[in-house]
Structure formats: structure tokens, C-alpha cells
Image (cartoon, rainbow, N blue to C red; front, side, top):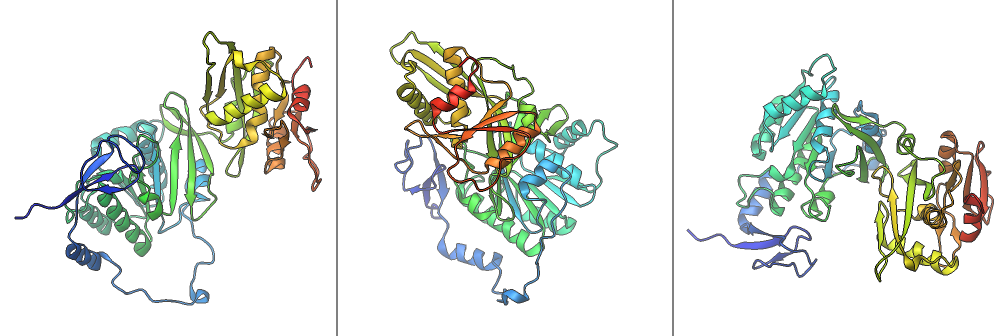
Length: 462
């Protein structure tokens, strides 16, 4: 028998090479090569003909196709439903990723137990036994009446066996935990390889589209924080959700990075407790609960996560350095963004930051990627350096330019309404060149053209 041909595939970028390499020449990742068996072309074509749609599809006119409105399946977890766009779309396939131990399996088991009260659900685990899942379910429903009757559990990794279980049970919802453990027996490569993950996900997508079953797939992430595959899974599925957060923090963010049935970048906030993931219906209030009012080095920013405005506390700390190169340590914001803000403060405000170590922290484990928090970061650093607190009832919104000017950001009125609802009395925003609509009531808005002007209004004692 001839030895099967093999190749080595990078888990990070998906590039194939004829031999194993310590470092991928394409993406530069180390120790990322996985051996994969090259499938025979004739065999692959025969499998494709068996498992394909078989040419039974019929083109239809757009006016003949039904489905004017989406008949979504209700999700009892409001934060989960918000990220999905209002509920689960029948026949959709959703990918849920996140770091190990972040709570993916816990959240999905909790969601399926709620949905099993009205719909039949099949939970397939390739990593845990039915007994382990039962123990977790009992812990999550400690204060509830009992376990749902329509939730079926099975430990299986063979995709053909999984599809047989689906055919016999006929669930409304299918959960695969995780896709890296599932394999197709006709393929010679190991479970978790790129070819196995791609083909298994394609079969599950075909199942969802032809049967109307909603499929949730849990995926592992690589060392770089992206879903393993490398990105082939994200192209196959309809929706991609990331569960984010520091495992040492209580809060978890469920973020939508792709959604064919709703808004992208939508965020649901949960708090990890002994009874599982607890919804945080007012995350801004939760992020500001332990804030020390009128403390130097603290400023309030309003960031947009999808369609939801969130108020977060940004802390800045400056400390005289004892080394030649001062440190810049951000937690929750981009490192290069911190360097830009520090350079503007040094050049435009003549602050002696070259002699200071600078630390910036976003409270609550949230990560801010948009530039609307630039003004709050600059105010926190200046407040710490001058030992002057920022006004306690003030929020700061604005992007910082290299000349020290403030630039307008999107959805400014939604941010101001959220700040007013939480009791903040004033806000500093960039000056508008055109007044299209009035500012929201309940909050005093002060406009500033430059960073020095904004800091003069923000800091107490100036």
C-alpha cells in the first residue's frame, strides 16, 4: 500500500508547505505547522458528489420567494438576543469563539437550557461526557425548579454519527462543542486539522440550510486570539460571535463581528458568577459602580459598542521614571494610540512626559478601539500629572488630532443621552461646524476646538 502524501499547513494563515518549518514564511508565526494528508482528487470529487446538493436546486424569481420578514426563534437571554439581532434565525449557523476558560461552554449550555423550555435542543460535546455536562447544568439551575426535558446531550465526534442523531431527534437547535473535535471518517487527516474543520463546517452549514435547524458551533482560538481554522470558519458561517474579557475580571463581552441578520459590532454584557453568566442590563452603571469620585487621573469616556453607548472610566497614572526610556503601559486601549496622545500632550501642551512613566487603564476589562476616547485619555493623563481631578459630573467625547485639535465622532447625541440618563450634568465635545440638530436635553454641552481649551474646562482648579 502506497504511503499517503502529506503536507504541512500553518494554523495561523492556512498556507501549505511541502515540509515542516519552525517559522511560517508567510505570516511569521512560530510552531504553527500541522501535518495534513493530501486527499486524492478522485476520492474528493466522489465525496463531493455524494454530499452535495445533487443539482436539485431550482432558480426562482425574486418576487416568488417567500420570507418578507424573519421568523426568529425567541432567546430568553436578552443580551444574547441583542447580539444576534433579535433572536435566532432558523437555518442559520453561528460560530462562537473565545479564549480557553472564558465561559463559552457555560454560556451556550445556559442558553440551550432556557430555549429547551419551548424547543427541542441537541447539545453535542466532543470534550466532556454527559455526566460532566449534567453536573454543570445542575449547578447553573440550582435555584430553578428542574432541568428541561427537551434538552438532549450526547458525547460524539464522528460527524456521520452526529447527523444520524440529528435525524432521529429532529431538534430545533443544534450545538456543537467544539468544531475542532469533529471529524469526517472518510478523510484521513486528524480531527482539528484545517481540512477537517472546513469540511465539517460545510456539512453543518448544508444541514442548517436544507433542514431549517439553527446550528451553533463553538470554536477554539489560536495564540493570536483568532478562531483556529484559520479564518475559513468565519467565511462559512452566517454569524461570528466572540466572547471577550479577562478571566480574572467578572465581566464578559459577547461581541458580534459578523452577522448576516443583524448589526455587526453589537455587544452583550454578562457577569460571571457561581450560577453562570448573569445578564448586565445596564453595563454603564456597572462599569462606574466602584468609581472614586474626584480622584486625580480619572475621566469618563462614552464609547459605542455597536448601537449601544457605554460609559467607562479611564484611569491615568504618571510616575517619575528612573530609567532612560520611560514606559508606556496601556490596558484596554491601543498602544500606538497612547503614544500618539502622549506626543500631542508633550508637543502642544508642553507637558514634561518624557520624564514620566505613563499607565492607562480602562476599568472593567473593556477594550476601546475607537478614537472617541482620546479626549478622556488625555484628560486622565494630564489630571494625574498635575494632580488636579476632572469634574465629577463630566463626560469627555472627542477624537484628538496631531495638531491638538478635537474632531467630531459619530452618534454624538446617542452618547449624550446615555450620559444624561446616568446623571451626568455636563459634557465636553468637539465644536460643531454645522448645527444640524439640537443637543439632547438634561445635559449641558460645552464645545471646544482644541485640546488645551477642553482641558481648561475639564480640570478642577484651572
